[in-house]
Image 1 (cartoon, one colour):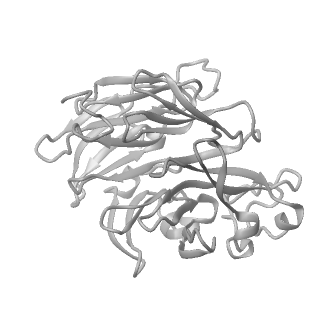
Image 2 (cartoon, rainbow, N blue to C red; image 1 turned 90 degrees about the vertical axis):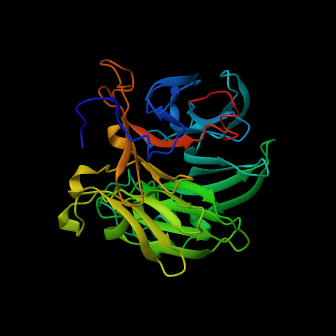
Length: 359
């Protein structure tokens, strides 16, 4: 929902999880770290607007995917230039792939894993099912690849939807354009080292076996997920995601987003957060979630620039709305928005903060 004021909205000191919250306003070149009072305590200036988001690593440096000049035009969440900035904002490392989009992670071994686009061969594109008829831009369809590269830029592992995915099994959502299959929007590893991916246009989340490149676990559910984001494994071994649910009742889904915690063994929903009433929590695209050490959950309702923390019982105990609205006449053409892709909370004693700040 649209919020009438910005900055800190509420803070229950007895229940909120103390720490610093990081976010990057979309289409702007700043990344902000705020304290529990909503005050900016540190800021980084990026070389260009982020391809989506940034996050702090255990060495205290910031990893960001910034927009490059290459890659396909008109595609969402374009990155292309992944940069590591130290605490003072100096670029200490970078990796260029103009086709990178949405998500990227620095792995424990120092390698980088990320999502990228590649044009599907005509024969492969002919097998793509679903989507809005006639919306494939003259028959051209872009698919996703996932690549792991070492610090020197050498590719050590790859996965391609064109060759490693049963394309006919996963039709594009009926309200999505056919120029893109299948719009991967998150990638990370689980504790076994396998690759967890979310594909928005297919309402699909899956775990890819790194050895066989086949799905070893998957769920695909339009009504339950509705263009989900931020598929991840949490500390108890369960999976969690942001279910955008951006369809209407016409498609069998009520308007209202949800955070879902899933038991991977049974595929049952073991915890869920929704708005009361449903429409009071709704972000039709972008957005994310983070399970905190306290057991609370930090939620980024991205389209409204809204970050809030809820208890296991669903009580909101901290809430903030970004005041960084894009000004009128901005070259991005996105004036008036304060959107963000994800947000992260870091404990004061975490290695990411490294004693540089105190509450």
